[in-house]
Amino acid sequence: MSANVSLPSRFTFLLESRRLRREYCTAHALEHIGSSRISSGTPPRSICGRVRFLGRSLRRRKRVTTGVSADSPENLIADGGGSSGSDDLEEARNMVFDIFVGLGVSKNEAIEISSKCPAYIQTLVGNVRELDESGLWNSWQIEEGEAGSLGFRKKVWYVAKEKGDNGLIPFLESIGLSSSTSTYVARYLSGKVGLVELVEKVKFVKEILFSERDRVKLIGKNARRMMKHFSISADDDVQRTLSYFEKMEARRGGLNMLDQGDASFPYLIESFPRVLLLSIDSSIKPLVQFFEEAGVPKGLIGMIILLFPPTIFYNIEKDIIPRIKFFARVGIEDKEMGKLLVKYPWILSNCIQKNYGEIVFLLSAEKVPKASITGAIKSWPHILGCSTGRMKLVLTQFVDLGVRSQKFAHIISSSPQLLLQRPQELLKVVTFMEELGFESRDIGKLLCRCPEIFAANIENTLKEKIRFITDLGIPEDHFPRVIRKYPEFLVCSIHNTLKPRMDYLMKVGLSRKEVASIVYRFSPLLGYSIEGVLKPKLEFLVYIMDKPIKEVVEYPRYFSYSLEKRIKPRFWVVKRRDLQCSLREMLGKNDEDFAAEYLGISRMLVPPDS
Image (tube, rainbow, N blue to C red; front, side, top):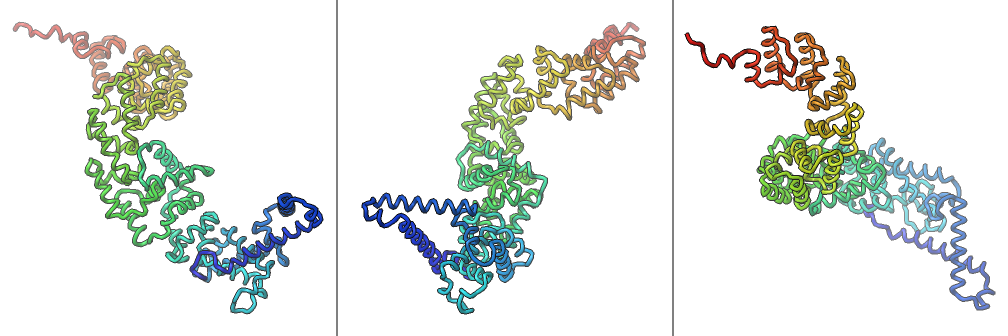
C-alpha cells in the first residue's frame, strides 16, 4: 500500500459522482414543479425554495425509511444491489484482516484490529458502493484488467490501497481514537513509523501505563487534587497536561477513568501523539529504569506518566536529573524523591521549580525555618503549585485568629495542606467552631493545638464526630469542654478509634451513661489505646487493687497516669501501710504531697539528735 495518507486524486471521482447525483435530483425537482409555473413568471427565489423543500422532503423520507442519514455508510451499503449490507461489512472486515496479515501483523492481532475499526470498514464499503453506482470503476488502471468486473472483496482491497494509510487509520481506530482523530494522527505518523513497530509500541506503552490495578481510585483523586491546588502560571508542559485532564473530566467517569486504558489511552494519544514516535529501547526503557533506580515502584511508574505525560519526552541527563538535583540541594534526599514523584510528578516542571523560591522567600519572612518548609513539601508537595498570593491570605487569617507568627512553623509542619486552603474554606471551619460555642481566641488556640481540624471536611468529618458524642449522650453545652480538652478527637476515625473504645468500656461493665460521663470529664481517653492503656490499667485496678471498675467514673484521669511509674509504686506504698484511699487521693497529689501524706517524709527532713 502507498505511504501517502492524503486523499488520492482518483478519489475526486467519488466527489464528482456525488455532485452529479445532486444535479440529477435538482433537475427532477424542477421537472415536478412544472415549466408552466416558470414561464408564468414565478420568481427564481421561489423556485429555488421549492427545490430545497423537495430535496429536504426526499432526504427526510430517506431517513424515515432507513433510520439513518442518506449519506451515511450504512445507507450507501443498503442502496447497493446484490449482497446484503451485513454481508458486505463481513467481506470488508475479512479483507482488512488479510491486509493486516499482509503487512506483517500477527493473525491474532489482525483479528482484534479488524473487529475494532467499524467506521473505517463502513467507509471502505461506502466508497465501493459509490464507485459501483457511478460506474467509475473502469477509470481505474489495475493489473487484473477492468476493475468493474472484480468481486466486492477485491474492490475493497483496491479502495484501501488507494487510501494510502498503510493500515495506520484502522489500527488507530481500533485502540479507541475517533475516525477524524485517527486520520489526523495517521498523517502525523506517516513515513515515520511502520505498522508492525507501532502495534508493538502501543502494547509496550499500555503495559507500562495500565499494568497496576490497585491504584485506580488513587490516580483520579490525585489528578483532581493537582488541578484544584494549582494556582500559578503554567508552563507549556503543565498546560498541555491540564488540557488532557479537562478532556478526561468531560467524559463519563471523568478522571476516575484515567487509569482505564480503553478510556484514557485514546485521549493521551490525541493530546500527545509524539508518544508513538518514541523509541522503546532508547527512550522509554531508559526512563522506566531511571524511575526504578530513583525509588519509584515499577507499578507506579505509569501513574507518574499519566499524571504528567510530558515526562516521557524528557531527556534524562539534560532535563530530569538537573531538576531532581535541585530538590536535593534544598534538603530532599535521593531516597525520598521516588515518593515525591509519585505524589506530585509536576515537580519536574519548570514552573514548579521557579515557584519554590517564591514560597521559601515568603515563609522565611514569617520566621518559618527552612527545615519546616522542606518537611511540608515532603508531606504535601502540592503546595509547590500554590501561588504565594493565596498563601498570604491564609497566613493573614491565622493572625486574625490571634496566632502569632512564631506558631506558623508548628501549624505548617503539622498540616501543610492548610496553605492550600481558600480563605472561604478556612472561614467555614471557623464559623462552625463558633456555632459550637468557641470564641475567636479559643479557635486560634485550637488551630495551634490541632491544625488538622481546619483542613478537615465539615460535613464528613467534623459534624460526624459531633453526632457521635451526641448519640453517646453528651449535652450540647458540654461540647466546648470535650473539644477543648481533646480537640484531636474531631479528626479521629469513628470506626477505627472512637467506637471501639466506647464499646470496650461498656463491655467491661460500664453503662452508656457512665461512659458519657467519663468522656465529658476526661475526653483524652478517646485517644487511648485499648491494648496499650485501657485494658492493662483496668485489669490492675480490678484484679490487683481490688477496686470496683466504677471508680474510674469518679476519677477518669486514672487512665492518664503511667502504670509502671506512678500507679503501681503508689499502690504498693499504700498497701504496705494498710491504708484506704480513693484513686484521686492516691494519684492526684504531686510527689511531695504524696510523700508527706503517706510516708511522713516531711517530718523527717531534720535528722533526730544522736
